Length: 418
Figure (tube, rainbow, N blue to C red):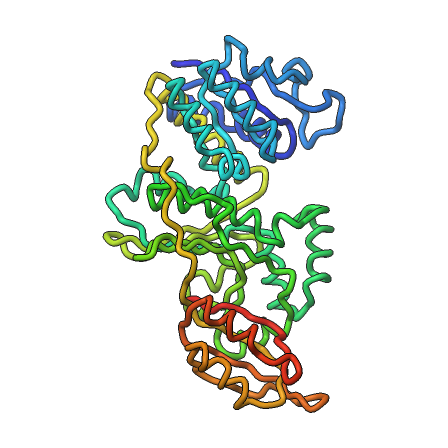
C-alpha cells in the first residue's frame, strides 16, 4: 500500500473538516483506494489560537516552508482563502514538486493562469473540485464526464448565503436586512458579507466553471456582477404572483457573438429545475449538445461538504503522482466576451402616464409583453409592472435612462430567465 504525506495550508474550519473526515475515513480509503493518507504538517497563523477541532500540536507550524518545501510531503492542500499569500504558497509548493489541492475560488479565478503554468512546468497536479459548490462534483463532471459535449449554457445557484437570504425573504415575507442579520447569527453569513451579497463570490466561481465548460479563459473582471442588496419583498411577491421564483443566478452562455457571463438576481419560472432550490443549497444546470439538460444539486458550502471534495481531490492526486499535469491549452486563451445580451425584464415603475412609458421603450426597440397597474398610486403617480419580451441589455438600459424623471421613477429592474 502506498503511503502519501499531506501538508495543510490552513487549520480553520475547512482544515479541521479535512482532518476530522480523514481520521474517520482513513481505513475506508485504504480499502477502497489502496493508499494511506497521512497529514504530517499544518500551517496556522497562531499555534495557540482556539480551533473547531483538536489538531495535534506537534503538527502545527507558522512557517509556510515547513509545508511547501518539506521533502517528506507529496501533496499540499490549501484553504487559506483570499488571493495572496495563498497563490504564492501554492506556486512555491508546485515549484518543489508537490501536487496542490485547493478550495480557493478567488485565487483560481484571478491567478489561475499562473497556477496552471506552475503545475505544468513542474509536472505536478493542480486539483480544485472544492472551489465551486463544495460537495457537488461539478468540476469533475466538466473535466471528465462531459468531454464529449459542447456545453452551450450554464445557469447556477452557486452562493449558499444569498440563496438562503432570498429563500427566507420569499417564504416569510421578510426584508433583506432582517434576514441578513438572522443569517449572520446562524453563521450562514460572514460578519462582512459583501463578497457574497454583492455577487463577487459567485463571479469567482462562474469564472472557473465557464473557463472549463467553454475551453478558454473567462476572466472574472469581464463578468457582469450585481448582488442582492437591492432586492425587496415587493420584487419577490410580484414574481411569485406571476409564477416565478427570484434567485441570484450565475449565467454563462456561448453564443455567436462570444461568451456572455453574468451574475445577477433573476426571475425563473416555477417549473425550472433551479426554482425549487432553497436554503443554503447550491445547484448547477447546464446544457450540452449531446447530454441535453442536466442539473447538479447539493450542499455547496460548509466544512464537511468542502472537506469531502478536498479529500476526493487528494485521493485523485495520490493516485496520479507520477503523471504529467495536463490541462487544456486553450484555457490559457482569453475567449471573446459578448458585450450585450438578450433577456426579458421585469420592471417596476411609479409613473404618471402609462402610454408615455410604453412609448419610451418602443423608441429603443424594446417590446413590452404587458403593463399592469399594481396597487394605488400616490402623488399623481401609479405603480406599474412592465414585463418586456426578450430584449437587448443595452436597449433596455437606454430606455430606462430616457424615462423622464419628472414623470416617473424606476423602483426595480430584474431580469427574467428560462
